[in-house]
Image 1: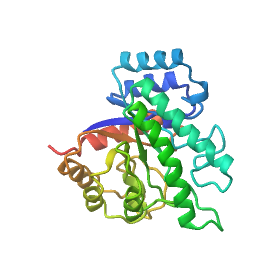
Image 2 (image 1 turned 60 degrees about the horizontal axis):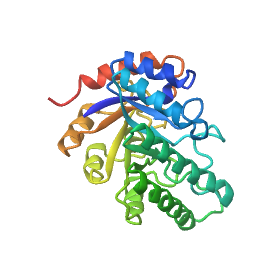
Image 3 (image 1 turned 45 degrees about the vertical axis):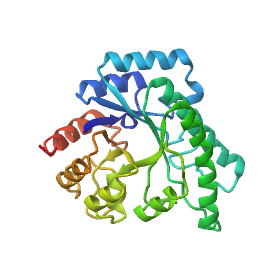
Image 4 (image 1 turned 90 degrees about the horizontal axis):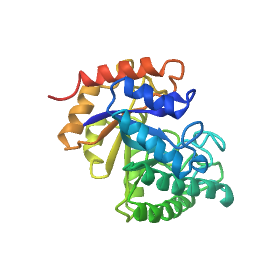
Length: 276
């Protein structure tokens, strides 16, 4: 298991600076952000991507994942979503995901992450929203198959897929081998999933992890690991026991005022709790 740091904590910095600063913290991996002000796909030509890939390699970093969840370049963290009632607006999410898959392939990234459907609008039946979501995912997964990049859904509190049962239901509708789970430990804690047991239950789909702490209130607010109520020693032990040896990405996007300090503290706390 290896730790990466998500560049979405550095949204006040150009992506080049984010790369340099994450490398200086001694993280071996970086999660890039497919959104402004970093790697918004329409702004990324081949030369720019080649330059970024070379910079990442010079810094001794490996790309753990490309985060294609946020779309603040269009609206916000969750919109446009996979389940917008307006088909044209919904289409923006599908196209962004396809563009992010292509960009990730050029960067040599193994995966991208996306939102779990989106907020369910009043008046929209859940079954109908699931149909839209699966339809859009399948189109994007066709591209994932072509470029060899995994497409990972990240359950989140308050969105269409937030719990383990709901993810398993979604997975039962998807046949592509490029489909998987981004297991966000904090999100699962927020919705009262027992973490070690859920890690085991969802291990067959899990291709990447997000780490952040959450307060004992289980309110969805990302905290530096060690500040909240999550038992990370137990979490890391469970991940080790299921045989996962991939990336654990620390995601602390609220810490815009001090991303370096937050990232440094997180790495120290988590490293000290890694299984022997």
